Length: 172
Image: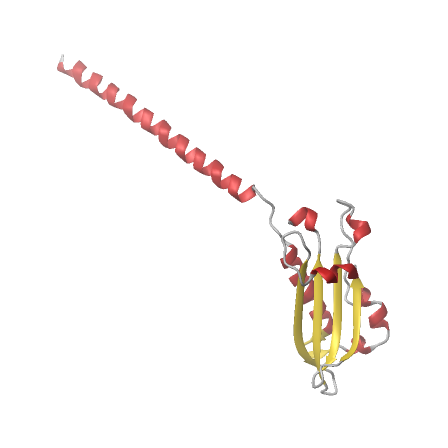
């Protein structure tokens, strides 16, 4: 008879543990759902990264190992800037993006001593430049980067690259 009493006590203890087990299970499931909602709740804004990649690609197209490439000084560079640097400004046709133009890039070559603009090349939607002074979540991202380089003769240049990415409807 003592054996039956011991087994009845163990069964009651198992029922109490199973209630706590389900409570812990619901708490863990709720925490996982909450974390997934936080992670996927709003879109990530890739415009800053995209403008940084665009600026880096242009700077590698213009100069290599600290020296400006020879084809940059040729006359065709200004007219065919995107072709020389192998840039593609085509975007998906979402929210009417193809008509508006989502990118703008401007490259200026300045004299190192006088900071006078020697020549420049630009491509894209130049209306985006007016938003660079303003700060807001729903405005284009502007990245202005300067660096110094030499030509083959040793003349020093300051190169200024302005890249702008709009895509506000999808990212902001």
